[in-house]
Length: 449
Ligand SMILES: NC(=O)c1ccc[n+]([C@@H]2O[C@H](COP(=O)([O-])OP(=O)(O)OC[C@H]3O[C@@H](n4cnc5c(N)ncnc54)[C@H](OP(=O)(O)O)[C@@H]3O)[C@@H](O)[C@H]2O)c1
Image (cartoon, rainbow, N blue to C red; front, side, top):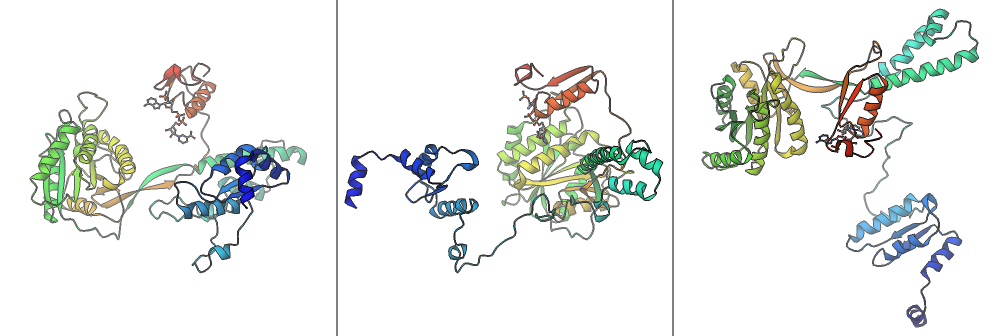
Protein backbone atom coordinates (compact mmCIF):
# COMPACT_ATOMS: atom_id res chain seq x y z
CA UNK A 1 0.00 0.00 0.00
CA UNK A 2 1.06 3.58 -0.42
CA UNK A 3 1.07 3.96 3.38
CA UNK A 4 3.60 1.15 3.71
CA UNK A 5 6.06 2.83 1.37
CA UNK A 6 5.58 6.20 3.01
CA UNK A 7 6.39 4.67 6.38
CA UNK A 8 9.25 2.77 4.81
CA UNK A 9 10.85 5.94 3.56
CA UNK A 10 10.15 8.17 6.53
CA UNK A 11 10.63 5.93 9.51
CA UNK A 12 13.49 3.76 10.72
CA UNK A 13 13.56 0.38 8.95
CA UNK A 14 14.59 -1.54 12.11
CA UNK A 15 15.98 -4.38 10.05
CA UNK A 16 18.04 -5.68 12.99
CA UNK A 17 14.98 -5.74 15.24
CA UNK A 18 13.05 -7.47 12.50
CA UNK A 19 15.57 -10.27 12.11
CA UNK A 20 15.99 -10.70 15.88
CA UNK A 21 12.18 -10.94 16.27
CA UNK A 22 12.02 -13.59 13.55
CA UNK A 23 14.91 -15.41 15.20
CA UNK A 24 13.04 -15.40 18.51
CA UNK A 25 10.15 -17.06 16.72
CA UNK A 26 12.44 -19.89 15.52
CA UNK A 27 12.86 -18.88 11.88
CA UNK A 28 15.84 -20.77 10.48
CA UNK A 29 15.74 -20.01 6.76
CA UNK A 30 15.24 -16.84 4.76
CA UNK A 31 14.66 -16.65 1.03
CA UNK A 32 15.48 -13.24 -0.39
CA UNK A 33 13.28 -12.43 -3.37
CA UNK A 34 14.94 -9.39 -4.88
CA UNK A 35 17.55 -8.27 -7.34
CA UNK A 36 20.58 -9.24 -5.25
CA UNK A 37 21.93 -10.67 -2.02
CA UNK A 38 22.27 -7.47 0.03
CA UNK A 39 19.62 -8.36 2.61
CA UNK A 40 20.94 -11.89 2.96
CA UNK A 41 24.37 -10.51 3.78
CA UNK A 42 22.90 -8.00 6.25
CA UNK A 43 20.66 -10.64 7.80
CA UNK A 44 23.60 -12.93 8.52
CA UNK A 45 25.21 -10.15 10.51
CA UNK A 46 22.01 -9.51 12.48
CA UNK A 47 21.35 -12.96 13.87
CA UNK A 48 22.79 -14.06 17.20
CA UNK A 49 22.99 -17.78 16.46
CA UNK A 50 26.31 -19.02 15.07
CA UNK A 51 27.73 -22.23 13.68
CA UNK A 52 25.36 -25.02 12.73
CA UNK A 53 22.50 -23.30 14.54
CA UNK A 54 22.75 -20.17 12.39
CA UNK A 55 19.89 -19.54 9.98
CA UNK A 56 20.31 -19.92 6.22
CA UNK A 57 20.02 -16.81 4.06
CA UNK A 58 19.32 -17.70 0.47
CA UNK A 59 19.23 -14.97 -2.17
CA UNK A 60 17.23 -16.06 -5.21
CA UNK A 61 19.17 -13.71 -7.50
CA UNK A 62 22.73 -12.45 -7.37
CA UNK A 63 24.08 -9.39 -9.10
CA UNK A 64 26.18 -10.30 -12.12
CA UNK A 65 25.45 -14.04 -11.98
CA UNK A 66 23.21 -16.05 -14.31
CA UNK A 67 19.64 -16.16 -12.99
CA UNK A 68 19.16 -19.89 -13.50
CA UNK A 69 22.28 -20.74 -11.59
CA UNK A 70 21.49 -18.35 -8.72
CA UNK A 71 17.95 -19.60 -8.32
CA UNK A 72 19.08 -23.22 -8.52
CA UNK A 73 21.73 -22.55 -5.88
CA UNK A 74 19.07 -21.02 -3.60
CA UNK A 75 16.75 -23.99 -4.05
CA UNK A 76 19.65 -26.41 -3.50
CA UNK A 77 20.69 -24.44 -0.40
CA UNK A 78 17.19 -24.86 0.99
CA UNK A 79 17.18 -28.55 0.10
CA UNK A 80 20.39 -29.39 1.96
CA UNK A 81 18.88 -27.72 5.04
CA UNK A 82 15.90 -30.01 4.90
CA UNK A 83 13.56 -27.56 3.20
CA UNK A 84 12.99 -29.58 0.07
CA UNK A 85 10.96 -28.03 -2.68
CA UNK A 86 8.56 -30.13 -4.69
CA UNK A 87 11.17 -31.57 -7.05
CA UNK A 88 8.52 -33.17 -9.28
CA UNK A 89 7.22 -29.69 -10.05
CA UNK A 90 10.69 -28.29 -10.59
CA UNK A 91 11.55 -30.96 -13.14
CA UNK A 92 8.09 -31.47 -14.61
CA UNK A 93 8.43 -32.49 -18.23
CA UNK A 94 12.21 -32.79 -18.02
CA UNK A 95 14.05 -36.07 -18.46
CA UNK A 96 15.25 -35.99 -14.86
CA UNK A 97 15.80 -39.02 -12.68
CA UNK A 98 17.16 -39.78 -9.24
CA UNK A 99 20.83 -40.75 -9.10
CA UNK A 100 22.44 -42.78 -6.36
CA UNK A 101 25.00 -40.71 -4.51
CA UNK A 102 28.46 -42.12 -3.88
CA UNK A 103 28.41 -44.27 -0.80
CA UNK A 104 30.54 -43.27 2.10
CA UNK A 105 32.94 -44.86 4.58
CA UNK A 106 30.86 -47.82 5.63
CA UNK A 107 29.92 -49.19 2.25
CA UNK A 108 32.95 -49.62 0.13
CA UNK A 109 31.57 -49.46 -3.38
CA UNK A 110 33.83 -47.92 -5.99
CA UNK A 111 31.95 -44.96 -7.38
CA UNK A 112 34.39 -43.60 -9.95
CA UNK A 113 35.01 -45.41 -13.20
CA UNK A 114 37.99 -47.69 -13.16
CA UNK A 115 41.00 -46.55 -15.11
CA UNK A 116 41.76 -49.48 -17.37
CA UNK A 117 45.41 -48.43 -17.66
CA UNK A 118 46.26 -48.19 -13.99
CA UNK A 119 45.15 -51.11 -11.95
CA UNK A 120 44.97 -49.53 -8.53
CA UNK A 121 41.69 -51.18 -7.68
CA UNK A 122 41.15 -52.85 -4.35
CA UNK A 123 43.11 -56.04 -3.79
CA UNK A 124 41.55 -59.17 -5.21
CA UNK A 125 39.14 -61.19 -3.09
CA UNK A 126 41.84 -63.47 -1.78
CA UNK A 127 43.44 -60.54 0.01
CA UNK A 128 40.22 -59.03 1.30
CA UNK A 129 40.54 -60.62 4.72
CA UNK A 130 44.04 -59.19 5.07
CA UNK A 131 47.19 -61.13 5.71
CA UNK A 132 47.03 -60.29 9.39
CA UNK A 133 43.63 -61.82 10.01
CA UNK A 134 44.46 -64.83 7.91
CA UNK A 135 47.63 -65.53 9.91
CA UNK A 136 45.87 -65.03 13.21
CA UNK A 137 43.09 -67.49 12.39
CA UNK A 138 45.66 -69.94 11.15
CA UNK A 139 47.18 -69.96 14.64
CA UNK A 140 43.73 -70.25 16.26
CA UNK A 141 42.81 -73.07 13.87
CA UNK A 142 45.88 -75.04 14.89
CA UNK A 143 44.62 -75.02 18.53
CA UNK A 144 48.23 -74.57 19.55
CA UNK A 145 48.03 -72.67 22.84
CA UNK A 146 51.77 -71.94 23.04
CA UNK A 147 51.83 -70.55 19.51
CA UNK A 148 48.80 -68.37 20.19
CA UNK A 149 50.29 -67.06 23.43
CA UNK A 150 53.58 -66.32 21.66
CA UNK A 151 51.76 -64.52 18.84
CA UNK A 152 49.91 -62.29 21.28
CA UNK A 153 52.85 -61.94 23.62
CA UNK A 154 50.92 -63.22 26.69
CA UNK A 155 51.45 -65.98 29.21
CA UNK A 156 49.69 -69.22 28.25
CA UNK A 157 47.77 -69.35 31.53
CA UNK A 158 46.57 -65.76 31.35
CA UNK A 159 42.83 -65.41 32.08
CA UNK A 160 40.60 -64.03 29.34
CA UNK A 161 40.63 -60.61 31.03
CA UNK A 162 44.37 -60.43 30.39
CA UNK A 163 44.21 -61.85 26.90
CA UNK A 164 41.59 -59.43 25.61
CA UNK A 165 43.70 -56.23 25.78
CA UNK A 166 46.64 -58.09 24.28
CA UNK A 167 44.43 -59.37 21.50
CA UNK A 168 43.06 -55.92 20.82
CA UNK A 169 46.51 -54.28 20.82
CA UNK A 170 47.86 -56.98 18.53
CA UNK A 171 44.99 -56.50 16.13
CA UNK A 172 45.34 -52.72 16.06
CA UNK A 173 49.06 -52.93 15.44
CA UNK A 174 48.68 -55.36 12.59
CA UNK A 175 45.75 -53.55 11.05
CA UNK A 176 47.81 -50.36 10.91
CA UNK A 177 50.62 -52.27 9.27
CA UNK A 178 48.23 -53.75 6.71
CA UNK A 179 46.81 -50.32 5.99
CA UNK A 180 50.23 -48.82 5.40
CA UNK A 181 51.17 -51.90 3.37
CA UNK A 182 48.17 -51.13 1.14
CA UNK A 183 49.66 -47.77 0.20
CA UNK A 184 52.72 -49.32 -1.38
CA UNK A 185 53.05 -49.38 -5.14
CA UNK A 186 55.73 -50.32 -7.57
CA UNK A 187 56.34 -49.74 -11.23
CA UNK A 188 56.13 -52.76 -13.48
CA UNK A 189 56.43 -53.16 -17.22
CA UNK A 190 53.96 -55.22 -19.20
CA UNK A 191 54.28 -56.27 -22.82
CA UNK A 192 51.78 -54.46 -25.01
CA UNK A 193 49.84 -56.77 -27.25
CA UNK A 194 46.86 -56.44 -29.56
CA UNK A 195 47.24 -52.69 -30.02
CA UNK A 196 47.33 -51.48 -33.59
CA UNK A 197 49.50 -48.40 -34.17
CA UNK A 198 47.96 -45.30 -35.68
CA UNK A 199 49.21 -43.99 -39.01
CA UNK A 200 52.31 -41.84 -39.11
CA UNK A 201 52.14 -38.92 -41.49
CA UNK A 202 52.67 -35.22 -41.88
CA UNK A 203 55.72 -33.25 -40.97
CA UNK A 204 57.93 -34.17 -38.01
CA UNK A 205 60.63 -32.29 -36.19
CA UNK A 206 63.54 -34.41 -35.00
CA UNK A 207 65.68 -32.85 -32.27
CA UNK A 208 69.14 -34.36 -31.88
CA UNK A 209 72.00 -33.27 -29.63
CA UNK A 210 74.98 -31.56 -31.22
CA UNK A 211 77.68 -34.09 -32.01
CA UNK A 212 75.19 -36.96 -32.19
CA UNK A 213 74.28 -36.75 -35.89
CA UNK A 214 75.90 -40.16 -36.41
CA UNK A 215 74.23 -41.79 -33.44
CA UNK A 216 72.59 -44.95 -34.76
CA UNK A 217 69.25 -43.92 -33.27
CA UNK A 218 69.42 -40.43 -34.80
CA UNK A 219 69.96 -42.01 -38.20
CA UNK A 220 67.37 -44.74 -37.69
CA UNK A 221 64.68 -42.40 -36.36
CA UNK A 222 64.92 -40.10 -39.40
CA UNK A 223 64.92 -43.05 -41.77
CA UNK A 224 61.98 -44.81 -40.14
CA UNK A 225 59.85 -41.68 -39.98
CA UNK A 226 60.49 -41.12 -43.68
CA UNK A 227 59.81 -44.76 -44.50
CA UNK A 228 56.41 -44.45 -42.85
CA UNK A 229 55.55 -41.46 -45.02
CA UNK A 230 56.44 -38.54 -42.77
CA UNK A 231 58.64 -35.67 -43.83
CA UNK A 232 61.37 -34.84 -41.35
CA UNK A 233 63.32 -31.74 -40.40
CA UNK A 234 66.19 -32.12 -38.01
CA UNK A 235 67.03 -29.52 -35.41
CA UNK A 236 70.43 -29.84 -33.77
CA UNK A 237 70.64 -28.61 -30.20
CA UNK A 238 73.79 -27.77 -28.30
CA UNK A 239 72.87 -27.83 -24.63
CA UNK A 240 75.83 -25.62 -23.75
CA UNK A 241 75.15 -22.92 -26.33
CA UNK A 242 71.45 -22.97 -27.17
CA UNK A 243 69.07 -21.30 -24.79
CA UNK A 244 65.32 -21.18 -25.03
CA UNK A 245 65.25 -18.04 -27.18
CA UNK A 246 67.86 -19.24 -29.67
CA UNK A 247 66.09 -22.56 -29.92
CA UNK A 248 62.66 -21.02 -30.53
CA UNK A 249 64.13 -18.94 -33.34
CA UNK A 250 65.81 -21.99 -34.89
CA UNK A 251 62.56 -23.97 -34.75
CA UNK A 252 60.63 -21.16 -36.41
CA UNK A 253 63.25 -20.86 -39.16
CA UNK A 254 63.36 -24.60 -39.70
CA UNK A 255 59.60 -24.84 -40.02
CA UNK A 256 59.47 -21.89 -42.41
CA UNK A 257 61.62 -23.88 -44.81
CA UNK A 258 59.65 -27.09 -44.31
CA UNK A 259 58.27 -28.80 -47.39
CA UNK A 260 54.73 -28.70 -46.02
CA UNK A 261 53.25 -25.47 -44.81
CA UNK A 262 50.92 -27.30 -42.45
CA UNK A 263 51.77 -27.30 -38.75
CA UNK A 264 54.04 -30.18 -37.69
CA UNK A 265 52.34 -33.43 -36.74
CA UNK A 266 54.85 -34.34 -34.09
CA UNK A 267 58.23 -33.73 -32.50
CA UNK A 268 60.69 -36.44 -31.52
CA UNK A 269 63.48 -35.46 -29.16
CA UNK A 270 66.63 -37.54 -28.83
CA UNK A 271 68.26 -34.81 -26.77
CA UNK A 272 68.47 -37.02 -23.69
CA UNK A 273 71.18 -39.04 -25.44
CA UNK A 274 73.60 -36.25 -24.52
CA UNK A 275 74.70 -37.57 -21.14
CA UNK A 276 77.57 -35.11 -20.63
CA UNK A 277 77.42 -32.95 -17.51
CA UNK A 278 76.04 -29.50 -18.28
CA UNK A 279 78.97 -27.03 -18.38
CA UNK A 280 77.24 -24.61 -16.01
CA UNK A 281 75.97 -27.20 -13.56
CA UNK A 282 77.80 -30.51 -13.70
CA UNK A 283 75.11 -32.26 -11.63
CA UNK A 284 72.69 -31.68 -14.48
CA UNK A 285 72.86 -33.92 -17.55
CA UNK A 286 73.16 -31.73 -20.66
CA UNK A 287 70.37 -33.67 -22.39
CA UNK A 288 67.94 -32.93 -19.58
CA UNK A 289 68.64 -29.19 -19.71
CA UNK A 290 68.33 -29.25 -23.49
CA UNK A 291 64.98 -31.05 -23.30
CA UNK A 292 63.60 -28.45 -20.91
CA UNK A 293 64.77 -25.68 -23.27
CA UNK A 294 63.15 -27.54 -26.16
CA UNK A 295 59.80 -27.85 -24.36
CA UNK A 296 59.84 -24.12 -23.62
CA UNK A 297 61.05 -23.15 -27.10
CA UNK A 298 58.34 -25.21 -28.80
CA UNK A 299 55.79 -23.28 -26.77
CA UNK A 300 57.43 -19.97 -27.67
CA UNK A 301 57.42 -20.96 -31.36
CA UNK A 302 53.73 -21.89 -31.13
CA UNK A 303 54.32 -25.50 -32.06
CA UNK A 304 51.31 -27.35 -30.73
CA UNK A 305 52.40 -30.79 -31.98
CA UNK A 306 52.94 -33.50 -29.37
CA UNK A 307 56.52 -33.91 -28.19
CA UNK A 308 57.91 -37.42 -27.70
CA UNK A 309 61.04 -37.64 -25.62
CA UNK A 310 63.23 -40.69 -26.13
CA UNK A 311 65.89 -42.12 -23.87
CA UNK A 312 68.20 -45.11 -24.29
CA UNK A 313 68.50 -47.63 -21.47
CA UNK A 314 67.06 -45.21 -18.90
CA UNK A 315 64.46 -47.63 -17.53
CA UNK A 316 64.60 -51.32 -16.77
CA UNK A 317 61.62 -53.39 -17.84
CA UNK A 318 62.71 -56.47 -15.91
CA UNK A 319 65.50 -58.17 -14.05
CA UNK A 320 67.53 -58.97 -17.17
CA UNK A 321 67.04 -55.53 -18.72
CA UNK A 322 70.16 -53.60 -17.83
CA UNK A 323 70.07 -49.89 -17.02
CA UNK A 324 72.71 -48.46 -19.32
CA UNK A 325 71.70 -44.80 -19.48
CA UNK A 326 71.22 -43.82 -15.88
CA UNK A 327 72.11 -40.19 -16.66
CA UNK A 328 69.05 -40.13 -18.94
CA UNK A 329 66.70 -41.41 -16.26
CA UNK A 330 65.87 -37.94 -14.84
CA UNK A 331 64.13 -37.21 -18.14
CA UNK A 332 61.39 -39.61 -17.04
CA UNK A 333 60.73 -37.33 -14.10
CA UNK A 334 60.80 -34.17 -16.19
CA UNK A 335 58.58 -35.83 -18.81
CA UNK A 336 55.90 -36.71 -16.28
CA UNK A 337 55.87 -33.14 -15.05
CA UNK A 338 55.57 -31.76 -18.57
CA UNK A 339 52.77 -34.24 -19.23
CA UNK A 340 50.84 -32.83 -16.28
CA UNK A 341 51.52 -29.19 -17.00
CA UNK A 342 51.28 -29.17 -20.80
CA UNK A 343 49.10 -32.18 -21.62
CA UNK A 344 47.94 -30.74 -24.94
CA UNK A 345 51.39 -30.71 -26.48
CA UNK A 346 52.98 -33.71 -24.84
CA UNK A 347 53.29 -37.03 -26.65
CA UNK A 348 55.05 -39.27 -24.18
CA UNK A 349 58.23 -40.97 -23.06
CA UNK A 350 59.83 -43.83 -24.91
CA UNK A 351 62.92 -45.75 -23.92
CA UNK A 352 65.00 -47.35 -26.66
CA UNK A 353 67.26 -50.41 -26.75
CA UNK A 354 71.00 -49.96 -27.37
CA UNK A 355 70.90 -50.52 -31.12
CA UNK A 356 68.22 -49.76 -33.67
CA UNK A 357 67.75 -52.92 -35.69
CA UNK A 358 64.94 -52.75 -38.20
CA UNK A 359 62.39 -54.20 -35.84
CA UNK A 360 63.22 -51.82 -33.01
CA UNK A 361 63.12 -48.83 -35.36
CA UNK A 362 59.73 -50.02 -36.64
CA UNK A 363 58.49 -50.27 -33.06
CA UNK A 364 59.59 -46.70 -32.39
CA UNK A 365 57.53 -45.64 -35.41
CA UNK A 366 54.57 -47.58 -33.97
CA UNK A 367 54.95 -45.72 -30.71
CA UNK A 368 55.08 -42.34 -32.46
CA UNK A 369 52.02 -43.23 -34.54
CA UNK A 370 50.18 -43.84 -31.29
CA UNK A 371 49.55 -47.12 -29.48
CA UNK A 372 46.20 -46.50 -27.87
CA UNK A 373 46.64 -43.94 -25.13
CA UNK A 374 49.99 -45.28 -23.96
CA UNK A 375 52.54 -42.59 -23.15
CA UNK A 376 55.17 -44.45 -21.08
CA UNK A 377 56.72 -47.05 -23.32
CA UNK A 378 59.90 -49.03 -23.73
CA UNK A 379 60.96 -50.58 -27.03
CA UNK A 380 62.85 -53.83 -26.55
CA UNK A 381 63.97 -56.65 -28.82
CA UNK A 382 61.06 -58.74 -27.55
CA UNK A 383 58.39 -56.10 -28.12
CA UNK A 384 56.95 -52.89 -26.78
CA UNK A 385 56.47 -52.61 -23.03
CA UNK A 386 54.19 -50.21 -21.16
CA UNK A 387 54.62 -48.83 -17.68
CA UNK A 388 52.08 -49.75 -15.02
CA UNK A 389 51.62 -48.96 -11.35
CA UNK A 390 50.77 -52.06 -9.37
CA UNK A 391 50.20 -52.70 -5.72
CA UNK A 392 53.25 -53.81 -3.80
CA UNK A 393 51.90 -55.23 -0.56
CA UNK A 394 54.38 -55.76 2.21
CA UNK A 395 54.36 -59.49 2.58
CA UNK A 396 56.94 -59.58 5.35
CA UNK A 397 57.15 -57.31 8.36
CA UNK A 398 60.23 -55.08 8.36
CA UNK A 399 63.35 -56.95 9.41
CA UNK A 400 64.03 -54.53 12.25
CA UNK A 401 63.72 -50.97 13.43
CA UNK A 402 65.29 -48.40 11.14
CA UNK A 403 68.14 -46.57 12.76
CA UNK A 404 70.41 -43.80 11.64
CA UNK A 405 73.58 -42.08 12.67
CA UNK A 406 75.57 -39.03 11.67
CA UNK A 407 73.84 -36.14 9.95
CA UNK A 408 70.39 -36.52 8.42
CA UNK A 409 69.55 -34.08 5.63
CA UNK A 410 65.88 -33.15 5.30
CA UNK A 411 65.00 -31.03 2.29
CA UNK A 412 61.93 -28.93 2.99
CA UNK A 413 62.78 -29.68 6.60
CA UNK A 414 60.88 -26.69 7.99
CA UNK A 415 57.65 -27.61 6.21
CA UNK A 416 54.64 -29.43 7.54
CA UNK A 417 55.95 -32.91 6.76
CA UNK A 418 59.62 -31.99 7.20
CA UNK A 419 59.02 -31.15 10.86
CA UNK A 420 57.51 -34.56 11.54
CA UNK A 421 60.35 -36.27 9.72
CA UNK A 422 62.94 -34.19 11.61
CA UNK A 423 61.43 -35.00 15.02
CA UNK A 424 61.15 -38.65 14.12
CA UNK A 425 64.79 -38.70 12.99
CA UNK A 426 65.84 -37.07 16.26
CA UNK A 427 63.89 -39.73 18.17
CA UNK A 428 65.49 -42.52 16.15
CA UNK A 429 68.97 -41.33 16.99
CA UNK A 430 70.17 -39.01 14.24
CA UNK A 431 73.11 -37.12 15.74
CA UNK A 432 72.69 -34.01 13.61
CA UNK A 433 69.82 -32.68 11.54
CA UNK A 434 70.34 -30.46 8.54
CA UNK A 435 66.99 -28.90 7.64
CA UNK A 436 67.08 -27.15 4.29
CA UNK A 437 64.60 -24.68 2.82
CA UNK A 438 64.57 -21.28 1.15
CA UNK A 439 63.71 -19.26 4.24
CA UNK A 440 65.80 -21.34 6.61
CA UNK A 441 65.67 -19.94 10.15
CA UNK A 442 63.10 -17.35 9.02
CA UNK A 443 60.45 -19.99 8.37
CA UNK A 444 57.51 -19.96 10.78
CA UNK A 445 58.35 -21.85 13.93
CA UNK A 446 61.90 -22.64 12.80
CA UNK A 447 63.62 -21.47 16.02
CA UNK A 448 61.41 -23.75 18.16
CA UNK A 449 61.94 -26.59 15.73
N1 LIG B 1 51.28 -32.42 3.80
C1 LIG B 1 50.78 -33.50 3.26
O1 LIG B 1 49.81 -34.08 3.77
C2 LIG B 1 51.39 -34.10 2.01
C3 LIG B 1 50.87 -35.29 1.52
C4 LIG B 1 51.45 -35.87 0.39
C5 LIG B 1 52.51 -35.27 -0.23
N2 LIG B 1 53.00 -34.10 0.24
C6 LIG B 1 54.15 -33.53 -0.46
O2 LIG B 1 55.27 -33.50 0.44
C7 LIG B 1 56.03 -32.32 0.22
C8 LIG B 1 56.14 -31.50 1.50
O3 LIG B 1 54.83 -31.20 1.93
P1 LIG B 1 54.55 -30.18 3.12
O4 LIG B 1 53.10 -30.27 3.45
O5 LIG B 1 55.55 -30.39 4.22
O6 LIG B 1 54.80 -28.80 2.38
P2 LIG B 1 55.20 -27.41 3.03
O7 LIG B 1 54.70 -27.29 4.43
O8 LIG B 1 54.82 -26.37 2.06
O9 LIG B 1 56.78 -27.50 3.12
C9 LIG B 1 57.60 -27.34 1.99
C10 LIG B 1 59.02 -27.18 2.46
O10 LIG B 1 59.88 -27.08 1.35
C11 LIG B 1 60.61 -25.87 1.39
N3 LIG B 1 60.76 -25.43 -0.01
C12 LIG B 1 59.81 -25.11 -0.89
N4 LIG B 1 60.32 -24.74 -2.06
C13 LIG B 1 61.67 -24.86 -1.93
C14 LIG B 1 62.76 -24.61 -2.80
N5 LIG B 1 62.56 -24.18 -4.04
N6 LIG B 1 64.00 -24.85 -2.33
C15 LIG B 1 64.20 -25.31 -1.09
N7 LIG B 1 63.21 -25.53 -0.20
C16 LIG B 1 61.95 -25.31 -0.62
C17 LIG B 1 59.74 -24.96 2.23
O11 LIG B 1 60.45 -23.95 2.89
P3 LIG B 1 60.67 -22.50 2.23
O12 LIG B 1 59.33 -22.02 1.77
O13 LIG B 1 61.27 -21.70 3.33
O14 LIG B 1 61.61 -22.73 1.12
C18 LIG B 1 59.22 -25.92 3.28
O15 LIG B 1 60.18 -26.17 4.27
C19 LIG B 1 55.33 -31.56 -0.92
O16 LIG B 1 55.96 -31.92 -2.13
C20 LIG B 1 53.92 -32.09 -0.87
O17 LIG B 1 53.31 -31.99 -2.13
C21 LIG B 1 52.45 -33.51 1.35
